[in-house]
Image (cartoon, rainbow, N blue to C red; front, side, top):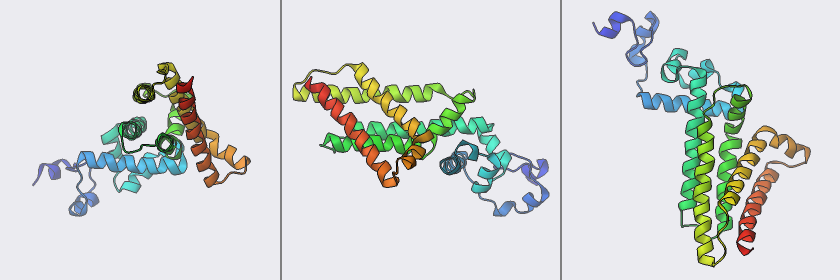
Length: 234
């Protein structure tokens, strides 16, 4: 008899297994801890995008993934732990996308690059619900990982400023102040957070459909792009 059978613990999830669960043990899917965490975060992200922060309920997510509620606690300790992990993963994904776009030499037209950058920010923070989740944690006094969002803005601003320095050197224009670049990053983050919380309501009141929202984002990208160009001409 195995040690799992003797203790009544599930050998993968390390949680109490009922007689019925032990009987069906052979049919259960075995996943690595890394895969289980990924699937849980994927399910949490889908519910966040569809329902907002209130949609992140451990029992519902467990049902989506096909595991038990204690299994989520095993990996994340609490709902707040899951929320922190979700914010950290999404922030890391956004950082990687932004840095890859900034470091890429494929886009020779900066306006195209600006559209890509802004699209990534709005898609991650607004469309996927990350900004709503982070705002909810901050407004309700929960211990959101402030270093995650703070580091994200400063890191992207640093990379963006380096690109602006290189562009200025190529064009023979004055180098912009780093604070100006930081303000551009802050404006973008603030716009995405506002869009996540009240943007769709404002758009509907203004008579804009989804295509109109997309045009607004493109307009905003051009606004930042033109500002960077105008600054170098000063």
